[in-house]
Length: 277
Image 1 (cartoon, rainbow, N blue to C red):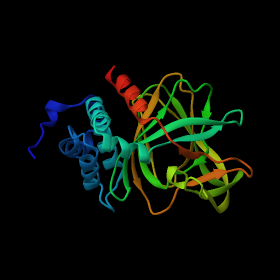
Image 2: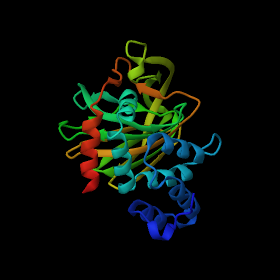
Image 3: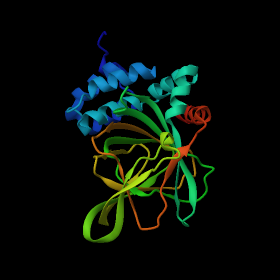
Image 4: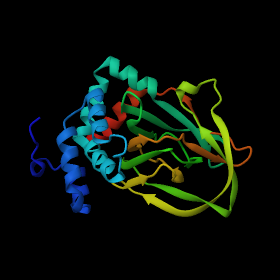
């Protein structure tokens, strides 16, 4: 593969990333060289996995990769590669799902669509899109949870959201941690397995605006709150860890459910039209 002239490409997202982190220029050059202009999901997932072998999954390197993947031309190319390939579209539809979470009045509500655009064969490395639709009225509060994975989340489409961060603390609220297995493959199976009783205390709140980057370790506990007045989407790069994700709930609190199929074509077409603007 011929080298790409980094100074000539400078996609918008990459230029912003480099301006803020000039001391990590090498990672973004490597990510640009390997990934920019590669749209077919299987090839893309192989190259991302090549850059993130076990034991070499630093959040710095993941951030560089995610910034390149979120560049508008790259995103439109990836979406078109999926929409024009029936086999790829079927694969994305099979592994994608819609969450039902807890609304602020305590009512269950469809909250967001999770599209898995590309994934390694073992599912360890994934490139995803979370999409909140503007037709959902009111505020959406997600259940407290960790991911059991390293995640880089870029808010590159739509409005703002806040994110409450929690830590275990003797003076915190008593909750039960459940091993979380919710996804479309768990329909009809036990989804939550009690693991431990803990106390959680909110220690910080992050407010994310378009262009912001959220770096999450395997054990970070958080609860995002959205009010999607406009179509809002984040690009997520995930490297799964050895442990499953945990959901933290009060006794009697219902769980998020991820077994609702999504209209992948509609989601991707809407996302594409917004990214193009």
